[in-house]
Image (cartoon, rainbow, N blue to C red; front, side, top):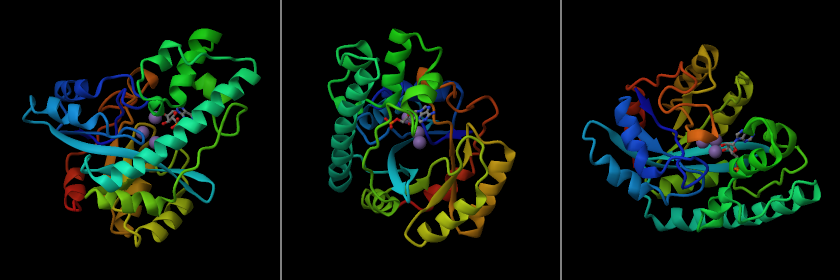
Length: 281
Ligand code: AMP
Ligand code: MN
Ligand code: MN
Ligand code: MN
């Protein structure tokens, strides 16, 4: 079993990057990737800590948000070189945009009657404000304003088209794919269907356009997928000659998905790993 999609507290997870190998080895997983949003600051600590577990393959990764005709598309880069200049410069720009967006969320929340102070513990532990994402806002809002859980905050305030949502400028998927390739990585379309909606026509349209532009693989196994989603994605990957990936999207306490097993039924097969490693640059 492997897990090629996880977040640490270097982005919007709650577990330190150096702790993830220990959790993965305890399951045990054969491979685990750290794929924080728009940052690789946790990768060195993650890889260093993984050396204590010789049976565990630690894969350096990143998750990049992109925009494709108004839809938010996430591209995960696996096997990236975290010191690559093209990648680092690109991620820096994404994080500047995140900071701008975060400032606007603070202002919108205040105008909606939910003022938050940047000194709250959910924010103040970051030396780099660009690591702050909507889950941190949701956690602070739950604690201070008594929402029942993070999902309720997303439903009422922070989700797309909700009143405190602020759009962030993100690149085209092809740009993210090119940057991942420049950093010698493999580009995976993360959660191609979201929350169990089987949008097979859109998935095929996207693959038709982006497979020729270098998309390497589809995330066919995911915490929120049932057998129909996984089957449709495995078939699509085969039809378009794409590799197969899978992961939990573990966020520690910021989500209910568990490392490796997701909501309980996830088990990404080991042999998916070979289809990805074969595409390493
Ligand atoms: P951001 O990247 O700062 O815009 O925040 C998006 C993150 O919020 C995602 O990566 C998820 O970790 C988290 N999230 C959890 N629930 C939701 C939801 N209902 N809608 C959007 N994002 C969500
Ligand atoms: Mn996230
Ligand atoms: Mn994502
Ligand atoms: Mn993710």
